[in-house]
Structure formats: C-alpha cells, structure tokens
Length: 511
Image (cartoon, rainbow, N blue to C red; front, side):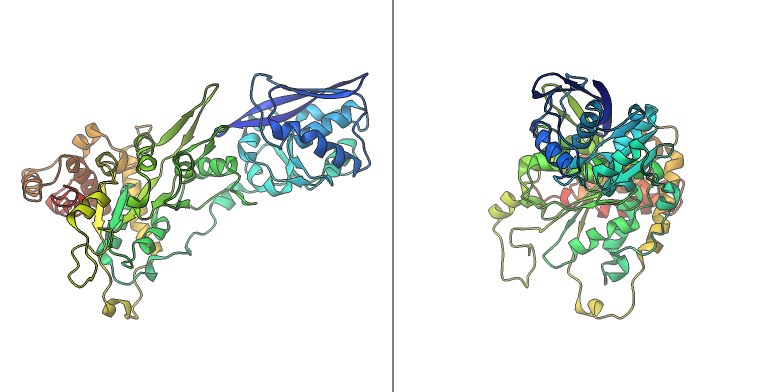
C-alpha cells in the first residue's frame, strides 16, 4: 500500500514542503531514499522502539520511503513522526483518510514522546500558504507556530495523541494565540534600566543619539568605567519593534532553535558573543548553514566587548553584512541568505593595560604596544562605526548620590519620536528606515549645511586632523541630533555636538 504524508524542510528562514511517500510490499528491508542525512537514516531504530512501546509494530516487510523532492538535502530528526505515521497508515495499523490535509513534524523518543524541533514558525507560514488545514508538532514548539492565523496548530506530547486524533478516538484542541495581544505586552519595565547608571550623562546622551538614528557606536575607556553596563541598557531605549520586525526576528530564532517555548518575540534581541568566537559562529555557516550571532541580533543589538581581543579575520567577515544588512552563505549546491540588520555596539580599552594617558596609573604601555593593540581593528571596520566616545570612570561623589537618574522609558519616548520623523522622511524608500542607513546621495539631500555650519566643520576637520571618512558620519549623526530636537535643518550646534563623537579619527589615536 502506498501512502503520502507531508513534512517540511527549512533552508535559511524559508520552508519547503516535503512529500514523504511510504510503500510497503512483499519482502524484507527498510529503504530510505531522497537525500536523507544520518539523523534521518537512524530514525528507523527510534521509530521501531516508539511503535513497540505504544502497542504497534514496524512491519516485517519491504518498506520503501521516498522523501520528495528527491534532489533536496533533508536533515535532522524532525521527520521521525512523519515517517512513523506514514508507516502505520501504509501497513493498515491505523486509518488516515485526511492525512493529506496536515503537516506532521516531530522527533520521537523511544517511548513515543516528542522532542522539540527547529524552524516551527517558517514551517507553519509555508503550511498556511500552501492551503494545509493543520500542523501537528511537539507541544514545546506550539506557541511559535500558533502565531500563524488561519492554520490549526496542534501541540502533541506523544505519538498516541496523533494516532487517536486520526482515528477519531480523541480530540486535540488547536492552540490559538492572539498575536497582537502577545505583541503589545507592556515593555515599560525593562530588566536593565538607565536609571541604574550613576553619572555618565554625556555617554547616556550619546547612547540616545545612537538609538535614535540606528548608529553603530564604540565605547573607549579604562576597566570599570561602565562600558558594559551602558551597552546592556541600550535595548531598553530602542523603539518598540513593529509586528513585521517581531515576526522576522522570531523566524530567525525559531530556525536556530532558541525560542524555548516562547511565542512571538516582542523585545529586541541583545547578543554578546565571547571574543573567542569563530567567524562561522559570528556570521553563520556550517555544512548545513545556520544563522550566526549577527543574524540572531537582527533588529536588535550586537555587543562586542573588548573589540581588539577578537581575531582580526572574525571582525573582517562582519564588514560586508554591516553594509548590506544581510549575509549570504554559499555552498556547492545551494545558497541561503539570513537578514542581519543590527546595531553594533563595541567597547575597548584604550591600551593593553587599559589606562592610556592616566597619570595616576602605575601601568603604562609603550607606543609600540599601543600601536600593535589598536591595529587589530581595521580602518574599514571603524569606517562603519558612526560614533566613537570616550568613557571616563565615575567619581565617588556621583556614585554615592541618592538621586535617581532618568529612566529608560523616558529616554525611549524621545528616541521613538525621532524615529517617527525618520520613518516619515524615508517612507518612499524600500531599504532605508533610519539615518544610519543613508547613502551619500541622501546625505547631500537631507543634511544640507548653511555657511556657518560648513565653516565649523571645515575648521574642525583641519584642527583635529579628522579623516575624510569622518565627514559623512558627522553629517549623519548631526541629522539625528536635529531629529531629536524635531529641527527641520541641521545647524551649527548639531554639527558641533556630532564632531565630539569621532574620538578615534583624531590624529594620534590610530596614526
């Protein structure tokens, strides 16, 4: 008897429906074809034990299973449930008249219970697009898949529940999630709040500008000055995600298997990889390409602490994704693209000892050591960082103050207002949503300067020996400062403030 059951394969952040054809005939043998990987080939042992422990059996006949399209590589253990149900129906152990209306996915334990799978959200989206009625999957993944409306999503704990449903012996209620209610959950109490930070008013102002314009930022200062503390609080002042951004971000985390029973992600991700990370782990890849840290930080923040400690080749592979806001991973037979539109926040000590130009410090570094330390960061990478700011230690008087600082919620209101101005400005442009994404043409159009501002910028570039790369960055940041004030034009005070945020371009830092 021949039976067709449906599963799904995930490539990048998109799913492809897989038809599992099960044929049982005279003879003996178990033949699995259609480019399955080792995890799928081993499924016969898991399926045999799971069926036996639930009162069924693997037929002692010739079982041929084809996973179509046969030229597409299939990977992972998520097809166990699909194959098991196909075998039971093909061997007439259970009925399955409506089996072609459902997508079935799940990894089987030996007792028949189900383990979570990856990519449940993209699979559910594809199932709805192709007109399937329902989707059976492990209960741990049900919240992410139930985000998709118009599809019956059934979370099951073991194979027996699916069998009973197909035979009409039991009912499973589809999981229903109000996506909008889930999305608009209150965000007014962030875990890390700027009100915890004592002093550092100029740095907080800098973070506010970075958040308002989506600018990449680097913090330079000695150990203990508060660089990490400030960076961790940046997501709390970013504008709330739109529903489209939330779906995009949830999709990537679903593919990576990082959702942990959560539904729709409504908070911007914050990723902080260790400096020993490999370039594949950072940008994504592997023999079956998986999203890397830069894609996991999509629509959020990627924090690289102690930037010069990262291997140079790791930082260099990040240059292209920073510019294109997506990363394409090519293999011999296929290519996948993951989105990677994130805010880069980096921190570093100004010297190997950490106490550059500190007269009270017993540790000093020679000019040669300084040069070698700073040369780990290439010019082209710094070129993609709009704001450089020096962080100085907080004096005792500030630390011991009882007065509470401004909260993240208050700062976020100003940031959101500035972002709304930018959204309106770039409404006709497909890939530009905020100031950091502007190219040279847009800078000329939206950052036009009067004579006073031009003269100020010229004087600053000459006196401070600012490099040519600083010019466009200063104008972008000045435009964001103007948006925070709801000013239609960039004026000299905006330029003057933006010039302060180019520390590493000054002569003597990396020269």
